[in-house]
Every structure is written in structure tokens, then in C-alpha cells.
Image 1 (tube, rainbow, N blue to C red):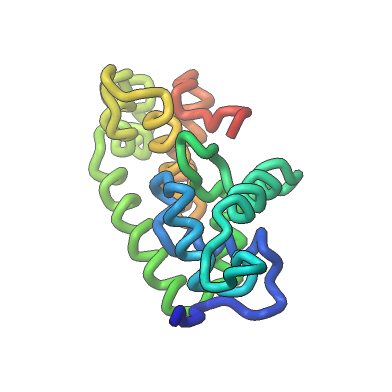
Image 2 (tube, rainbow, N blue to C red; image 1 turned 30 degrees about the vertical axis):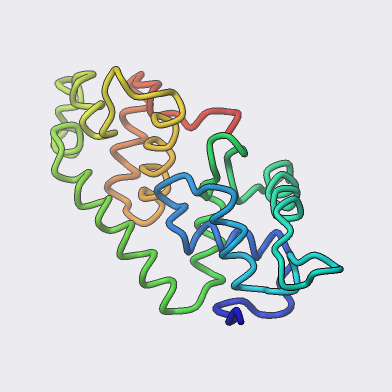
Length: 193
């Protein structure tokens, strides 16, 4: 028997999948569709079940719900079936306002680890100390934790993770904004996201 956690009955299906992505670590990493489906069914067992076999999770219903949320104007999730799903900055903001205190604290702890790591980089230190002209491409790659072997998907994941972390830390937000303005386009969250 599945137990309900963190979801009120008045939430819509798009809210449930957003919370599921959040609770699975989707603020910092892509989450596979099947993991989102399992967590969504835990949060609201009847919302994503088959009609004839209610104990089974309807993966197609979860997929369509994610795609609908992706297509919405204020989309809270970003991704695809192939790449997995992450919270957009709007999604992270929404989750912080709508999840339980325990889940919120866990989320904040994960993000604070990412912020602490970013603050130890040369790109961060140079930008904060008004030495942005000294920031190199290598410094930015270290900030992102990427190299030339990273796929486009993994680069997008790292940029989105930092953008999400910046929502909770004004210094990191300042650094990312400054570096983007300085022409480090790799730090832009893509339009397809």
C-alpha cells in the first residue's frame, strides 16, 4: 500500500508532478520519467492510476501531465522524456511556497551545498571582488563543473542547477548575472528550457 506524503487533495496533477520532481532532487538534476511516476503515485495514488487496475501507475498520464506543464506559460518543469525533468526557477519558487516544512528544509539543504561549492570557485571570488575582467572560460567551466566532454544536456542541467541555486542566494545571483552580462553565454538558460 502506498502512503501519501506532502500533497493536499486540492492539488492538480501538474502540481503533483512538480512536487514529485522537487522531492526527487529536480532542482539540481534531471529526474527520469519513471521516477517521477513512482513519486507522483506515492503523493497521490488515485491521480495517476489505471481505471481497470487502480493499483498500477499510468506512466502515459504522468508523461502527458509533465508535457502539459512544460507547455504552460508559467512552466514549472523543464525537460523531455529523453533528458529527464528538472524544476525551472519558477517551479523551484512555487515548490518552496507549497511543500511541507520538512521537504522544504531538505530542498534548502541540497541547494545550500551547491551554493557553498559555487562560492569556493575562482569565478565567484573574482566577480565578488570586482575582478570580473580576470574571470576566464576555465573559471566559468569550474563554476559550472563542466568540461569539453560534457554533453549539451549535462551542460544545460548544470546551468539550470546554478540558476535555481541563485534564487536562494543573492551573491550567487549577482555573480551569474554579472558573468552573463560580461558575455559568458554558456551561463544562459536556453529558450527551449
